[in-house]
Each structure stands twice: as C-alpha cells, then as structure tokens.
Image (tube, rainbow, N blue to C red; front, top):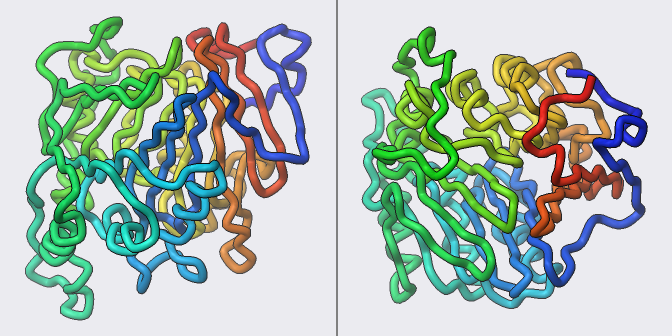
Length: 366
C-alpha cells in the first residue's frame, strides 16, 4: 500500500495532526474502537446522544486487565458525557465478545440487548476442561441471566433499527444472509469464481455473527463480528448483497479465516480498522488482502501485530498501541459528518487524518 503524503496537492485529502483526539460535534457521529486487548468493543454515539455498543470484550478474569474490558468501556462512555448505553449488540457468544456483559451491567445502565438468538456452538471433544467456564455453553446462560429484566431482541437479516440519526440494517444473523441485495448493491463479484469453501471457522458461533451495515447521512459502515469465510461468500456471491461502504471494521480481529478478496471487493472500503491484539489477529494474509482492496485509502490498527513483522503492519502513526509490554490502552476514534467525511484519530498521539466525503467511493489517487 502506498503512503500518500501529498493529499493536499491532489485535492483528495486533508491531513491534520492535533494534540487532542477528535471529538464529535452537534451534527456528527462518534465511533470509538476501544482497546480490549484482542477482544471487541466498539462504541457509537449519535448527535442526539443516543448510543450503541457492539460487543463487550473479555470477562474480568481474562483478556484486558487493570482495567478490565468493562471498566475500559465504562470509562469511554463517561468520557463522552453519557451515563447509560441505549443498545448493546452482542454479535456472538465467544468469550472475547460477550464476556464483559456482567461487569458492564454492574457499572452502567443498559437499555436494550440485541443478539442472534440461542447459542449454536458446543465444545469440541478435546476441549480443555480448564477452559470450560469460557465455552459458549457456559457463557450463554450467564449472559441470559445477566440481562434478565432488560429489553432483549434477537435479530434476523433484513431487520432495521433507528438509533437517533443512525440507521442499523442487519445483513447476517444466525448463519443466514439476506435474500435480496440492499439498495445500491447487486454487482457481480469476479473473485467469487475462485473462492473455495473454507471448513475452518474458529467455532460455530463465528458463523452465526450478527453483521450490520450502519448508515449515517451519506456514510455507510460495515461491522460483521467474526463472520466466517463461507458466510461471506453467501453474502456477496455471485452478486453482492451489501454494496460499497466507507468504513469497514475488519472481521474477526483480522484473522485469515475471514475477510476474503470477494468480500473486500464487494465492500470496497475507503477506511479499515482492525480491532486486533498484540498477539491476536491482524494476520499477514488479511493484511495482504486489504492492501489489494480496490479503494482502500488507509488501514488503522488497535495494536501492532507482533507475529506479523513490520512489513505486514500499517505505519506506526496509524497504530494505537505499539507493544504489548508497554500498552497505552489507546483507541482509534472516528468522527463522521452527515455529508460523509471521516476524521480518524489515534488517541495515543492525537494524530488525525481526515477523509473528505467525495473520496469515499473513488479510486486510489495516483
């Protein structure tokens, strides 16, 4: 991937460095990819101060510690001036996505929980007994108990939800994809012809992930949880059912089990964010696939991918946390205008880059 330093000369980009992280205004959507050490937790706050959290990271005894995942999420919510969460969407019931729910509820009120319905995964025959408490068969009942008394809705493809001026459309849930393309989709994807099935999926719950397209003004954002290769194929082959997006939260922390060339062609994101850990996700195969995505302007990462080598990481300015040994708990924040521009900020340094609306669906500058 080229690094374009002369954006102003070509008239396509505005580059800015600020000592402060970008903040949402009265007419903007704020998105924060919270560092939960290789889990997932993404916060959306609308101009009307309505909120959506997608996934809750790890339980307190695993993953992010001192502070744990829930504490990091609660701190982010309060930092942005909110005292509650309107919606929490659990994409699936793996421990790094649903594990933080009980601790989250002990620290902040939540209105409605959204998910794909019952757990679909059973432990493998050779599963470690020491990890039994963190298998989906144990986590799902704990989740249901934790959310008892809250509004609760199971989603299916085609469902929609208005959260202030943010529109959520479900495109995958419980292993199903929509029958008809969304408006503006329907392109034939050439990579489908060579896209073989992939039996490995990282666990059945990955395939059941709730995948959503979020629309705010002229902007479209895709977030698919840990959606698997084979469900990606059902979603975009032979004809794409989603359409192009401006921002893509790279699936499954950037592992090679997802993010197929066919999906990346269909979405053609201008910006991609990988919610990886220092030693989890951001695989070299995914990095290479992203670099060949036809309209990608910039890749951002929550962590430097320590297993991948420097050649398979985005430049340091676009990485929130550089080492596991000296983790700064930094996030990646995007502020989106209704006209379609994005300003993405690395909270570790305050470095920001702005992507004007007119570039979102254009090709890369020469």
